[in-house]
Length: 194
Image 1 (cartoon, rainbow, N blue to C red):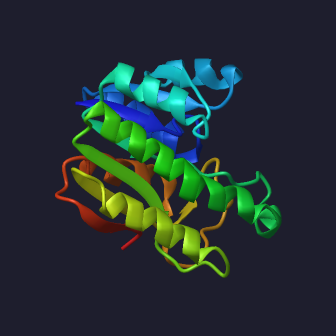
Image 2 (cartoon, helix red, strand yellow):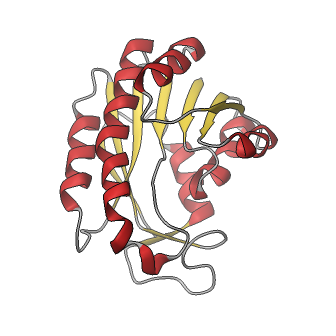
């Protein structure tokens, strides 16, 4: 399968990309910074340096790659979890506008499938953006799949040493489960620890 992975240099993207490549898929992986392009290449993907808010260039990149599946693994979260409330607007924007731009690009490319990261809990603030993201994905003209992840824990996450309260999922397990869902029939899937 040809997979266009938006967010290949992110926390889950760094775990997911090599698994997709190992499974035999051709992967184009996005990053916002030229400095991280080599990281994406080192994970086995073709790096695409792009800003999801540049709808025209995003569309060109996705169409040029010709994916069977487009996967949204984007967030705009700060490195320090205590800053999440102050930076909520950026994450809301990427869920709403970023998702819309990527869906439009996927549709233009004729991608059959669209999978997107969401969350398995109701946030204290910003639930409207989660709902907006999920509505867009489930309305995809093809197969749309919402991946509702529990809070990530493990290397590179906010919870490297101690797991958070449920719902939660260890980051490597989240990546493995995501690979197993590439051909699911659509709808909403929760990816959480048992």
